[in-house]
Image 1: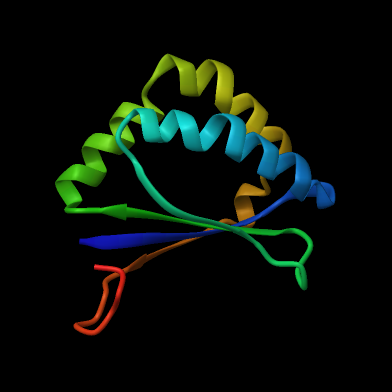
Image 2 (image 1 turned 135 degrees about the vertical axis):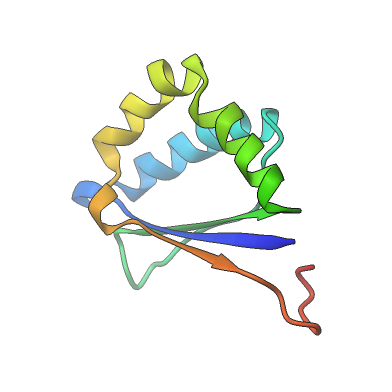
Length: 106
């Protein structure tokens, strides 16, 4: 098991609009494809920061879920264009985290 810790910077301080898109469309869509989203966060001290965390049981599962989400017509035609208007992709940071023996997130 491992986690993806995804840190995004949102354009033009439009975090409220981004959170609305995440909660109304992106997260429900990804969950419908099998993604395990375990957290969604804003950082009041950094008004353009949005963080979310996904959990995968294996690399094979991650590959399958990426394909199901990111190769789908719904993602590419409906959701991705909305994301591109809000997300500063150049500042996106994705970190793979593996829990230690005492971690509660296992």
